[in-house]
Each structure stands twice: as structure tokens, then as C-alpha cells.
Image (cartoon, rainbow, N blue to C red; front, side, top):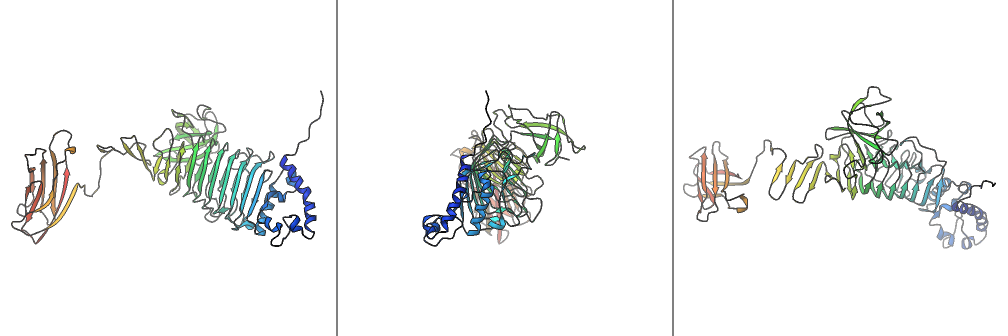
Length: 561
């Protein structure tokens, strides 16, 4: 049974591009005639005010710039031409409702766009099968490049569906990059990195990044400072993607230069290609170091200290999450490097995504600020399976997950509650509570230490004038039944001090619940100057008088013991 191979069929959208080219000549001819502004429309033609052409001139479409490349299946030049024409013509809205396959990056030039405030909306953007193939997380070619020697600002870029074809980065800054802009990517998948900043040469700050569902990428978001230029930070990004899930090496990787980021949305099932190793030291281990274990090799994505322990996250070439795969590294063996023979670190623990009892701990956000003075990340997240990294105690993080109550980290203060016990944690030091508070007690893990400062109960102070007969109430004691365990007496230790050297007193006072006992019993009284002042108990009032100086300052500190 014979036959012949079918020629590749043009896509519906490519056919539309060819149709656009076919009609372009007719339009061009039409618009040269008198009255063309009323009967036709040509995007490059000037129209008088009040004509149909002038009305249509408020926006342009990508199809208006379809060319031979578009007809052949590459819309990159058409998109760039539409953007640049709009910027030069003072048009602020560019729309594309088609499925745009591209074979090379779309460059949004800062020299053209500047801060003119462009709204660019694309329905579908797809990297072609001929896109250059990446070899690592760091060398993919981006589908959209923003910036050059001039920075872009005021850009509103919206892409409903972005697909990197398993080879391309999504969006990356170039040169001066971009700032004060809004990027929205609804569905992002099959990208190496969806958004990657770390090669800019100028501050790329205060960018709003939103989306709907980002999945099946190598890494969703990478923010860092650039390696050269003038303060090339990526600070104060506002990130709110509804669901970042199932991306190989984590959902978000934040490094130095990305301080003050604000994160929202939900995050889960990320980091399945990472092995988390606790090692005896980070000496010789840094980001990018190539390492190997007994069953494979990889690259260190992050190396950090947390709670006086040393950790590295290593990128594996496959899914090593439980129960899908197995890490290339084992506890007890030595971690070495093929490029640095001096590296010989002992592996103390090995963890992978989903290896806890419930199979729910994933590696969603990497808070990678090792070597930085602080992070200052603000994260208010609905659900997040795991945040890992250094200097977590310098950030404000509140997140929920299904296996740990310690997802709130307010500058290092962790808070959890069982319903009866409120526990406080110093997350920089330990995951063991330093204080437990109930309706009955406050319990500290160790001693309460006030340094050289006063440990004070109920304090009272008065200035009492000279008198040989008149007593003044310094303080009153009260009988509280709820302060007892059984029917024991209430016992108070009272210290009295004055502003005169050597004039002080110490008293041990009992209170009873017996209604027939009208006054407390002073079980012990010690005065350091017997003639300086006199005291008495009248009812539950503790009274003093003094005939030593014109004015004597009394301070009482009352402790229940």
C-alpha cells in the first residue's frame, strides 16, 4: 500500500496572516483614493478627525503588521513592528487575539518605549519547535526581552497563555531592563524560567507580577541583582499568582537584590527535582558548585545556614520526590566536587519533596539571602508547602499548610496555638517554643532574665511629708480566691525603699479568706533604719508615716509568692 508524505499544513492563524497580506495591497490601493477614510482603513495612513479611520486609530492589532515571517509561522517581527509603530505614533494599546508562534525573541526596546505607557495584550504566545535548546537553568533564550540601553517603565503586558516549548525562558530583562510596570501571565507552562531578572544593569524595582496558573516549568520566578551596572536591584516586586504549582526547582527563587518583595497567591507541589542536604560545613560550597554523590551529580542551587545548621539544595536531572524517585545522595557519605578537589563535606541528612509522614512538604519558595545583611520579604500566602533558606527571621511571612503550625514568621517570631496553649518560637534559633501561655500560666523554656533591670510586681510610689502622728496609706492588698490552688493563704513579699540611704524595709504579709480576720498578718518585718519611718496595717491598707525629713519618697514593690 503506497502513498506520499503530506506537506505541512499551515495553521489557521498562519492562513489568517496570509489573508492579511493578500488584502494589504487592496487596502493600500483603496486608501489612496478620495474618501478612503470613510470606506476603508489602512494602519499607516493619516486620517482626518471625524472619519472612521481616525476612530480606529486609537489602537492597533498585531495582524495589522502581519508579514512574510508571520505567514511562515513566526510572529516575532510582526509583534515588534506593531509595538514600535504604536510607540512612535502615540498609540497606547496594542492587541493580539491569535495564537502567536515565535522563533526568536520579541524585543521591547527601551529606546522606543521609554516611559510612554504601552498596553500590550497577547492571547497566546508559543515558542516554536526550532527554538534554541537550553542546557541548564541559566542559559535559555527568552521569548520576550525588555529593555536595552534605556529602561522601560509604565508597561502593561498581558499574555493569556505562555508556552516555552520546554526550551525558552518567558520574560527577561536586558540592559537597563524595566521598572514600575505590570506583567500578567495567565497560564504559563513549559518554560525554563517564566520570569527571570538577574542580568539587568539598572534598578528594576516596583514591578507588579500577576497570573493565574503557572505549572510544569523548571522555575516560575527568579529575582536577583545583576552582576554589573549601577545598583542593578530587583527590589519591591509585588508577586500575586493565583497558583504556582509543580515546577521542577521550586516556584520562586529570591536572592540578594530582591529585598522587599511582597508575595501572595498559593504555592504547592514545587521542587520535586531538588535534594536538600544537611552537611557539616558550607566551606567550599556555594551557588553553582558542581557536586556529586554515590549515585549521581548535580548543581547547588542554594547554600545556606538555618538555625546553626548548614544546608544545600541540589538540582537533580529527574524527579526525586517521594515516592516517585530517589535522591542521588545519602546520609553518611561524602559530598565531593568534580571541579574542586578540596571539597569533601559529610552529608548528615537528606530530604526530598513529599518525604514527610503526610507526603505534603514541597519546596515552593527559596529564600536565598546567604551573605546578605537582611531579606525583608513580606509574604501573605493562602497555602504554601514550604519556604526554605537563610535569614528567614528578617522577613514577615504568614502562610498556611497542612503539616506544620510554624508557618508564621514575623521577623523570626513564630506563633502557634493548640486551642489551649499559645506557643512562641524564636525561629532563628530553634523550632522548640521558648514560651507557652495558657489561661493558667506563662511558662518559659528557661529562666526569666531581666538583666540589671527591676523585676517588678505591683508598684506604687508616693511622697509623704513629715508627721509625728498621721499615717498615709501606701498601698492596699486584696483577697482573690482565684489566686489559690487550694485553701492556702495568699502570701505577699513587699519591698519598701526610699530616696534616703539606708532607709528601707522588707515585709512578708499573709492574707486569709476567713471573714473574721479583718487584717492581714505581717509574718515578717525587717527595717534597715528603725527610726526613719513607722508602719501599720489598717484593714487591708498598709500605711506609713515619717518624721525624719520634710519630704520622703516611698516606693513599694509588691510580689505575690
